[in-house]
Image (cartoon, rainbow, N blue to C red; front, side, top):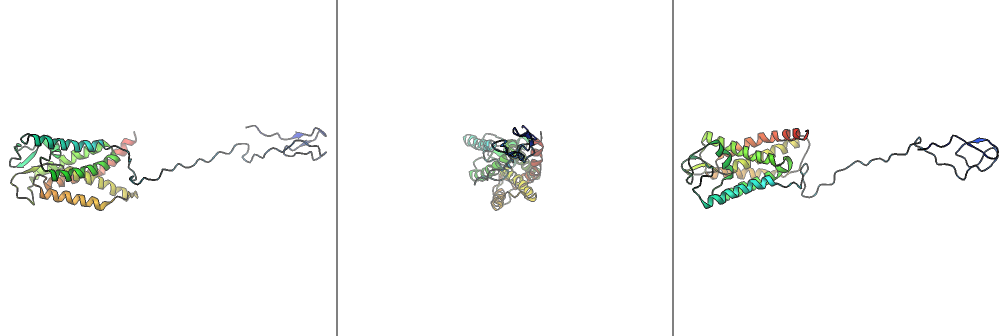
Length: 268
């Protein structure tokens, strides 16, 4: 930016006068039509203050810390696999899809508790549609929230690990059904995986609240779902309460680890 002259010379008397006057103080001759504007910024233009960027207001369906437009493909895939297994079982009940049987012969499935079956049985519900409906609704609700916060890989990992952990505990203790007189029981369905996903989400939510990040979630509904899943595990012989306990414990542990893994992944 060009600097103003230090003085101007009056053409009438030859005197040096201030560049900020219009008439010569010595002879009264008009020096210029108008005085130049004063530069109060020391010769530099004022910089416009940048407005602090603010996040837009949350929409009615949006929750703090969650990306509302994330598609829950992993959660939907888990539910679809479970429903597909039910259709396959309905077509051929004698087909061994990977059920874990603790006592007796569960619809023709051999009494086998191999490790691979621990990961398969959370997808299997045979013809227990009422049990399947409750378990998959819980998987859908908490899988959706976990996937929005931690991504699809986290949801698949929580479902698989919690389901397998619950099945492993049931095999270890061979827990019989408590409110059922069934002589044939095993580990079937996603009660352990669903409770694990619920506990993983709940642990992360409560830790966030301790840090001052109150997300204003309806915890009463969460506790109601947890109680329903526990009672279902007591009432349905194939659900197995030990699987529910094991899945819940594994989910609580994963709820502590998921934020650490997500934070570490974000730094790369």
